[in-house]
Amino acid sequence: MPTHKLITLAEAVRRYTWDGMQYASGAALPVGSDAIVFGRELLRQQRRELHAIFHANTQQLNLLAAAGAVTQAECGFSGLEGFGFANGLRRAIEQGRLVLEDFSNLAMALRLLGGALNWPFVPATVNIGSDLQYRRAFEPDVHPNPNKIPSVTDPFSGKQVGAFSPLRPDLAAIHVTLADPEGNAIMLGTEWSRFELSRAAKRVVLLADAIVDTDCMRQYPNLVRIPGIVVEAVVYWPFAAWPQASPGMHDVDEAHMKAMNVALGSDDGTAAYVRDYVESYADLDGYLDLIGRETISELSNGATAFLLDPYRRWLLPHAEALALTAETSA
Image (cartoon, rainbow, N blue to C red; front, side, top):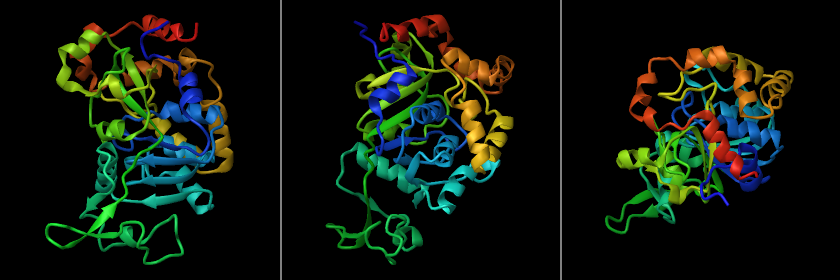
């Protein structure tokens, strides 16, 4: 029996997800590293009524919302930065198909930290006195709402402060740059709460651009921000963050980012996008062919490619990573 944690993407979704679950993802900015391909597989397996937790919205939440897989969401930012507002997310909210609970970026980070530390609540000094405190999307008719960020008394000073509810999602699908077969992971670029998320979630699945020998983790132990002990499974999937960027691996696909957001702005466009970019491939190589080998080459030779240089000696070849994954399906 295999002793490593590598499994297929389809198996990861079958094994660790279900309808109505609290699902978390989101990572390095709304245009950076996120396990977007995991969201595509959620749609392929027709998961529904998800409660999504994203520190910041990404094209994954945009797609899941547009396709009707998410009915509740909590996040700290809902745009796509330079690519405009998330059309799929906005459309789902405007049509009443999705309820979005809004917090600030710092609040989401603190709530994940509270979940990671198993706190009963998180003392809040931000969002206080604004509609972020008193408007609760899950109870829209109650205003001012005392249940979103209730007041508590500081036992040392006697002052009134707010209290955030900690976040403990059922599953976190986390994009990482490098993972070894045991689930130890290195992230290049900004983390955006992936450290806290990996400790807060009840289960963690890693989506790795590349698999490396464990000697890489031994060489750089201080960079292993997610250790294998908190990881259930590892999925080898280059360009898992596409069309967003993965620093060191590939740049953002600007043309597809724009086209995808336009498509998700309508029912017909969403149906066409799901048909062409979610249901159209059978495996990893088919997915890479869908992106286009020429596009992959161009995106892989961007300004951040040098970040991968210290780790290249430990990268497992594509065929070897696929062979390890196949062991769990044999």
